[in-house]
Length: 182
Image (tube, rainbow, N blue to C red; front, side):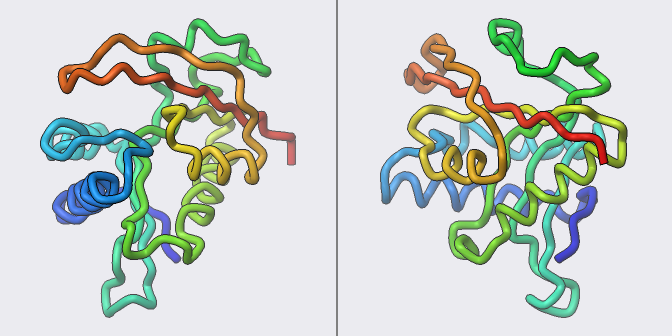
């Protein structure tokens, strides 16, 4: 598996993954509560791409150039509501690596891509001198929360968001993994 920074030609595939997650949820019940055409969109993908913050996990065995199985946005940007939590590790922004909008193609799930992406995310943090990993998800996304906990993330609390443009009021769970020195 290859974990790499996305390039412009990956944008369409990343949106396909996000849309596939939305379609899967429409058929199987909301978990991460993405809404096709609302979030995430091509604008989300292109913005992260232009900032150099979009990453992909490619399975080189899936074809000549590989198939992108997962994508996510990784940066030091923490949502405003993160200020409400008593994080286990007090860190400067440059010491915190945050994962946003992470998705695995539903047709490629249960093959280890999610855990592999998370391992690369953690390695990236170590390689850049970060001390902690942070992320959030909605409370209904039990599947992702179980994976994050299995990988050593601790739940720090919840935050009730205001209704979004689709009319949903979402409750977010904040998770953190403090990195031990190597």
